[in-house]
Length: 213
Image (cartoon, rainbow, N blue to C red; front, side):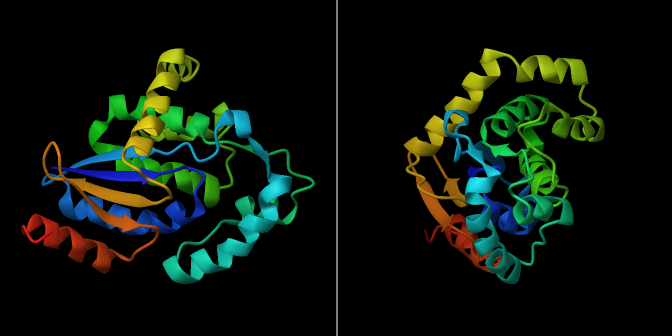
């Protein structure tokens, strides 16, 4: 059985959901396969300057923090509070490619890596469209930097990231985060659409795993 976590690296609610999906991962690893699918929420061809969406992001942050307990870091908030001074132009593609590369190195650690990516952005204020944002992660996961950056520039891994986006659409995912559990070739159960807490998600999982889904 496989649990699919459909997210986007630039989805603030996914950042808020990180602690929930991480608890699920550590509770069920070894019992289920976990696949993280990047949703392509902001494709590179539709990249958005932070100045255009800072107001929208700022309006949702207090709600995300109060409901989920996640905290947005000072370095990220500087860009939100000073959008006219920020040079950020946000898109999901590079971080989605990074996930496709990482999956080949550590297929069993996709959930922790997704969480690490989002912490780099929302806690540490790293620009995920900048190659240098990934260098510290390569050290943590002991990935050769030259090899990683060669793959980052390769059309092959862009295609792999695009495949994730296509699969998310095939699964009829319309928002993030979304969690589905595949129990056999034809059966998918929707466990959550949007944020839910750990207890709720676990109860839904156990209902399906117990044959009551």
